[in-house]
Image 1 (cartoon, one colour):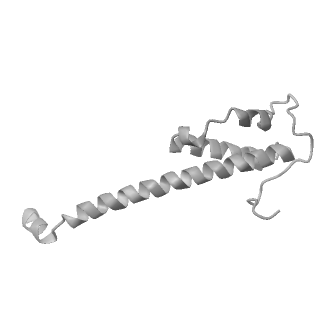
Image 2 (cartoon, one colour; image 1 turned 90 degrees about the vertical axis):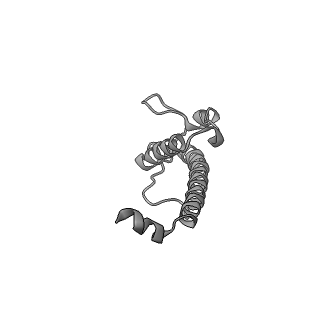
Length: 110
């Protein structure tokens, strides 16, 4: 299956929860918090949990598809947050470096 990370196992059985500790991801997805309401850390934690569940092979086909969709949404959200942070850091660096005069600093450290 193209586009699916290696190592993610799919069970081809009924995706409805069967009691043995499995939760129906379809029902769970309705209660997912919108990515925009999550912190970066919360989104990353949710993504990590989804990946672990998918890799464990405990999810059925439909649950895997739902988890993959949610994971893709969380990954895009995290990438956006990281890009925004990178831009903020770059702007801060430009402001600091613009005002930085190495010749003036040499006189302070001698």
